[in-house]
Length: 486
Image (cartoon, rainbow, N blue to C red; front, side, top):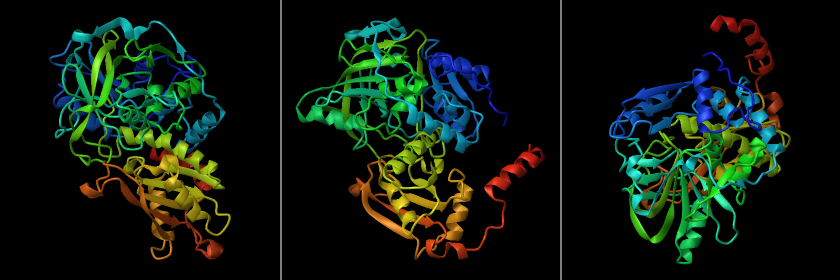
């Protein structure tokens, strides 16, 4: 596939200012297609499944949706290529994947959080609905999977909450089901920051104020579905990455901040006493693993949206899909940093593989320095913050293996890992209702398996030498002879 040509920075460290400017840039490079006339009941979900499971496919915007006003649009598949992910993050897009990761990690190390600035107005306030005028049914929320329990208005969205004890604001991506014109239901997995904050209100017998942002700056969305450290606001994180403070509006109903350039914003309160049946919903594992249950309802008291609003869709599908691809890129960088901070030396690279939804299969490449180094790396990867939630397998390989290359990792696993000697199991790790391999009555914990696919440390010098080209020799060969396979 031809390398996508992307522009230089326009605002701070980014080459775009908001979602609409991002779309103009993506369209200019040939990475956007428009579909007219697709319906929300089946068409949009079907089309999304096709592009999600086609590597290199374009972003797609659906317009002129039957039964909805022209201009009320749905955008999907925004981040299905590494070049679009890199463009969104403000890093060079024409590098090999490992070098993109290095550049992104450099940016993460250099940035300092930068708090947002409050403004009184912005494009999101072009249209306001309050009280009896609230009508969520005007937005084209798709039914993403054929057996979903309803239409989901929030997949490429994030919820804004404030910790009632500590005061910091969290922005997290959690699924949002459309119930009726004034209510949505939202499920949050146990242990997630948004659920911890929500429960603090419920434990006090108080309603939880919530803002839901259903379309935003693409970087802000990526931040909301990434393991940002506890206590750090995603607005501050995005400000630090871009070098410019985000502009936010204080919600008139809840007092919570939301982006001034957002596409659609819902504002209201949830309680522990008012619940409605939520689900089922096809999740990132590729299954209906969390079934249906009563979940808290957000009573929406106000809606704000831009003219011709764009509903951002990022539904999970069977991996590898769009969600797995952008989360693999972001989570891998954070996992590497978590391992460094834990004191694991000489970690050469990590990758949270897309086929496992960026969680179930982790690969770690190390240069072995001492006995037990590989086991240390595997256990830390499995249980540090970025790897702890709903993991399954960790494969530790030597430095000659590219952890981003699944075939390379599987070759090392098949040829260097002896099942009797080289496997460890961790019991009762952090899982949740989405885990398809756990009995419905026992959700909450799962086990992890660590595979040591490195050369055995004590006789590594006697291990048979590889017969193929070294990574350095492969690079030279590709430069000389790559034209043969173009």
